[in-house]
Image 1: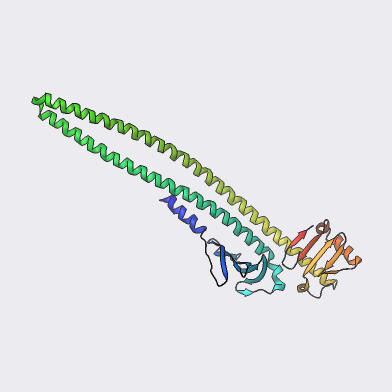
Image 2 (image 1 turned 90 degrees about the vertical axis):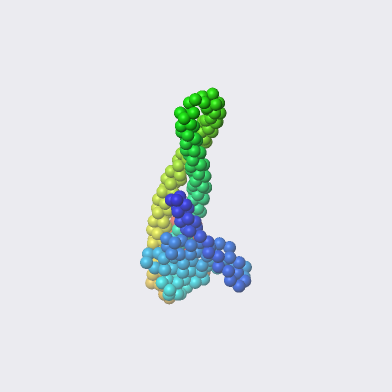
Amino acid sequence: MKAKYLGLMAMLLAAVTVSAQTKKSAKTAYDDDRYNSYDRIHTVDGKKVEDIKVSRNDKVYKAEFVNEKMTELYVDGEKIPQSDWGKYSGEIAAIRVQIELNKKQAKANAIQAKRNEEQDRLNEEQAKRNAEQAVKNEMQAKKNAEQQARNAEQAERNEIQAKKNAEQDGRNAEQVKRNHEQNEVNEEQAKRNAEQAAKNEIQAKKNVEQQARNAEQAKRNAEQAAENERFIKELTEDLVNDKVIPDKNSLRDFNLNNDGMTVNGVKQPDELFKKYKEKYSKQSSGGFNYSRDGIIINN
């Protein structure tokens, strides 16, 4: 049945892959067939280890996080040095957000598929009962026809046949009663089917709305990641030009607030602080921090 097929597809989207290793206890895992990706979480020697693989924008990203901190990054099979991780921070953030949304949607789809499967089972049982009743009705109709033929042939035995007819009438009345009861059961089932169809329609509408919200959120995430990457690139170039750091790969952390500016833990002169606070007034209005893992925090 169509509903069973949809249910199977939903359960495949929510399939869980558990990776068991020495001294490891697998906790959760998730595969998203639409991106040909996985997000596996397990523990190694008491530490939370998360492995991610995603195909995105014609590139394959693989990363490992230990206790929420990235320890390895590969792009199209090439290992990316830690000094270049900041270039891919936006992609990694967007990927993790999308995977989390897909998990929630897959879970909702699986629940709905289970409901549909249960309704299919009830419908099949009712159809079976209807078929059995139809057979009984046909058999009864055949008996009635045979009885009428016997009545014509046994006209001279009207008294005996009348008794038989009375008995048959009683059986017919019982059958009518059963038919009436069955009709009531059928009407109730039809009512439940209509209610379920209405629920299915509402759920389908919610699913479409959720997909639209997911798409809009992914777009906003990508735009924010691009803006962050542009800003950090400009900031790094300024720091190199002002000889605060020797090259673009030397920036480990940056802090700018109303009290001053520090680069890689070293407080900078007031003249340089004023220059950067004025140029980056939009970001420094409340102060902000940057670390090499690509995270920008506005105070």
